[in-house]
Length: 314
Image 1 (cartoon, one colour):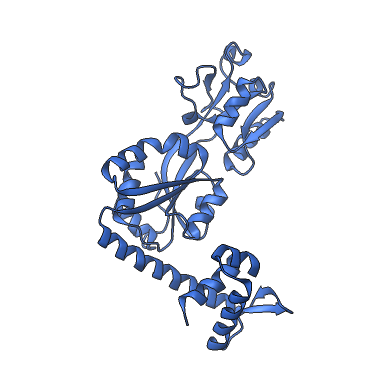
Image 2 (cartoon, rainbow, N blue to C red):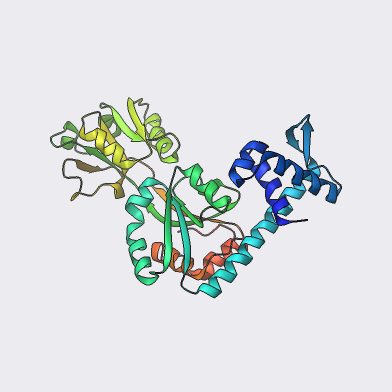
């Protein structure tokens, strides 16, 4: 039994039983994967996959057990390698963060700047994506940490730790009618076309729910993953924008005006996601504390290793 065989069966399962997709992801051939999977099945004397001709159609019951064990073994092997690199390299290595655009653009810069001053020899990589994408990156070991407001707490393979709470603002061009609304109400906002976050974000559904609870059905003319895209189309007069308050900077966004909307929508919670059981290098814990000072190394280690789960809250 070889780690390569375990990696192949896990990748086939992760790719929806698509051997071609698994081969492409692992930079190998489809026949090579099929051969190694067959060899592992012969060695274990169980069928891992159900086949119809040459196609894999399902996981067998023992196959599900094999995949679960193989994933743990691969995770332990990755942790072992990471631990060796950590202690051998000291303050060298790579830290990969996966974040939504708003987090990468507005929440991370301060922590990133402080981290690079402290660890100039650590390569810091930031991947941007929607909440589902960044969670999958961490679960697959392609990123060390993910930061978002959505999906992290619901992902079974991740520990979710709370970082900070935030709310929303409404952005409009200068001299817009909403600037005269005292107080700002959902009814007043609903009279205008709205530009806001994409459906992939839970925050979009929170905004929709707030209107629905008041019996309002505003016209959503555009949705986007990117807060800067929302602001661009508000500047063009397409509608009024609803976005995270942190995404508005009066110095940069001089052509827009922001109205506090925290009294109109529920507060949201940004979380940090870490793969359960993952080994993190020492500098990763320092980055976490720079970003969310309440998340001490001891608390994070206990959560990741399952001693306190993901029950910690702000």
